[in-house]
Structures are given as structure tokens and as C-alpha cells.
Length: 428
Ligand code: PMP
Image: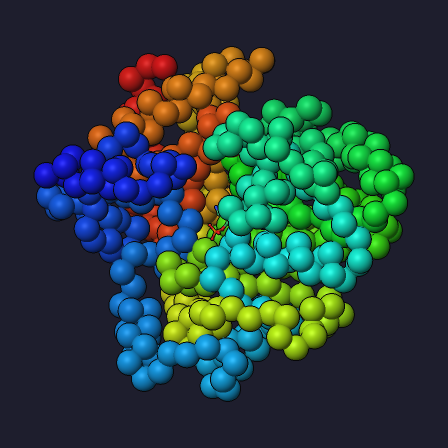
């Protein structure tokens, strides 16, 4: 029955979308960090970076349902939830970033951020990193340079997009935690060519701990110097916090805090709605003002009463259940369990990240760092048999993307580490 249903899906769901697994389990229910298939089998969900509160949170369901029954409309009306939610988001952001645009996804947020950068500066060019993913919409796709899902990503860049080397401290061109200077030197000719082109630099977009590269910390000082270079040319700095932000790092609420920088524009989505479609751009009055001609921005569902209530309930639950602290404590514990695997299993090359934003990178050879791409896919398939949902990430799809709900218990973290150890012991 599952296969028959799946073939109906494959007949009509547009092809470009990739599936988890050849035939994913047919799931029908979720609770906290687990999902259950139609036969009642439990899977530990270690990959869903959207459901930060966990699956099926009753407080969120009740808040959304109640608001839905009372009123749902659009943000051209005046209602309490909109004023309150914007105020709360502004309070979470650094001083001076107090203007909020509400949208429905990370792609939309990044698209709008790029548009704001252009409107504010009157310039055209955008700087981004190699190995990045920022979304599927036209502008966010243009700055997405990951070749993992789109091998043509580099060949098809529009001329206003300038990608610089991925500042990957593990396997990048320069490597090592002290490589900021080398990466910035490599960035210089790109900036010079933008200067020479005469159309100016509108902005720079990056994740501040590099999720799409596998949860890699950028070289120390990299972002502060990159931001300075961009700002010296009048450009604005966009922190894509869609995946890294909102408490997942445990040690910080925002990813950019790890690099000690303050961006001009923050984009968020994913966890902020825990699965309810929600995204936002938070920026300064000066930058927001560049689009302030009335009527220029409107999203039919962005900032609806239901969205605002969903977003505020997520924040309330995060505080009440201390989920950022949990991400820090359980994440630190899990990271040390994963680090122990490196000593025993040559294929386990490195553990990246912090909190519940981790990556375990598999290599065929620790000197050449040849990526163990096929092995990583096979390890994920084997983990599924043992009841763990896991997927590869990074340009070479050789890093385990460990981004579970922030309510992950120590017991579940240990189960994951035990299963991983079991799989790796089977020999690779
Ligand atoms: N930015 C980053 C860093 C992301 O990881 C993603 C989603 N994987 C996006 C943007 C796009 O978000 P969405 O899928 O909500 O459009």
C-alpha cells in the first residue's frame, strides 16, 4: 500500500524535488523528537530543523486553532497579535534593528533582503559564499551556490552574483581555524572587480556558522573583516539566520553572535513557526525605509493573525521549556559522543558545529579528505533501518546533518550516538 501511494505521488509531484530515501517511510504522526509510520514504528527525527519545539506540540496546535476560529486576515488590518509579534522580534534583534517584514518562508525573506540591499544602496552586485543555500526563489536561488543539489549552480549565476571561496575551516582551500586572512586575501580581487565594474556593491549574504557546509564554524574574525570590506563600499550585510538562528546553537540565540558581528539585515524562517509557514526580515529603519513607499511591500499571509500567534507561541514555549539551554546542554553532550567516534572509526573525519547544529563529516582518507559520499548515503540508509532519520549535507553530501528538534533529550541523543556507533562498527 505504501509503495502504491508513493508511486501516485511520484506520478504528480514535480520532479525537481528530491526525496529523503528511495522510498521514504510513510509517516502519519509525530511527537516531540519522534515520528511514527503507519505501522506504528518510531523514528528518531535528527534532521528536521523546522520543528524546533518538537512534533505535535499541543500548545501550538491550540493557539493556532483558537486564533483560526476567532479571526484570520491580513496585515493591512490592525490587530493586537501583529503589534505584539513585531515588537517581540525587534526586541530579540540587536539595537537599531527594529523594523520587521513578515513573510512565509526563508526564500522569501532572503529575496526581500536582497531587494532591500539593492533599494537601499542603489547598487547592483551581491557577494555570497560558495557552498551556500539561501532559497529557491529567483534572487535567493541566484546567491545559492551549493552544487550538492544543483550541479549547474555555478554555471548559471547571473552576472550580479559574485561568489567567493567557501571559508570552510575543514576542507576549504585554506583550511584551519586561523585561515581568515587567506580567505579575505582571496576575496580582494572579487571586490576589486566589483569596484571596477562601476555598479557598486549592494550587499553580502552569508550564514554565520556555515550550516550548508556541514555546520562549520567560519575562521575566527572572518565575518567582521568581510563586513568591514562590504560596508567600506556602501554595501549592507545580511545574516541568513533561517537555519542557524533562533536558539539552535544553544550557546547563542543568533548565529552572528558566534562571530561577534552585528548585521544590517537578519532573515529568519523555519523554526520561528515550528512548521507553520513563517519568515521575517528584521532590519534598520534606514534600510526598511528604502521600500517604504506605501504599497511596495505586502504579503497576503505574511503576518496574519494566525502566523503572529503561532510565532509568539513558539517563543513562549522556547522560554518556558528552556529549549535554547537544552540545545546547549544536550548538544554539548552529543558533540562529545560524536567526537569519541573519530578516535575509533577512520571514516569519521571531524565533528563540526555546536548546540543542536552539528555535522559529522565522513572521509575516505584523513590526509586527502576525499569525501565519503556513497558511504554517507549508505550510513543514512542503515540508520533508517535502526529507527533514525538522518540525511547528508555539504557540497559533497558527506556530512551528517544533525539538526534535531531542540527538545531532544539526552536519552535520545545517546540513542542516536549508539546507533551511529553500531553502524560504523559494521565496517566502512
Ligand atoms: N536559508 C537557509 C540557510 C536555509 O537552510 C533554507 C532552507 N533550507 C532557506 C534559506 C530557505 O528557506 P525555505 O525553505 O523556508 O524557503
